[in-house]
Image (tube, rainbow, N blue to C red; front, side):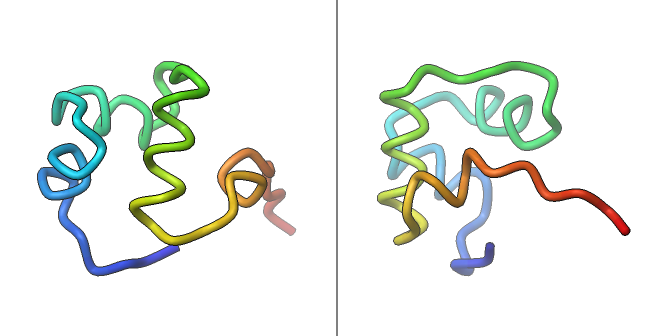
Amino acid sequence: MEKGLTMNELALVCDVEYGAISTIERGKVNCSISTAFAIAKALDTPIEKLLTVETIK
């Protein structure tokens, strides 16, 4: 899911700390539903896509 945003830009748009975006992206922490909605909105993607687990074949 690419939108052309850096993690810093995404953090600014979502009004969260850069470190939070980084740890969420790496799967180290779970985010709140409000943060998930903010990320989905910033990436212009349905939240369901963010919450879907993709398996590697």
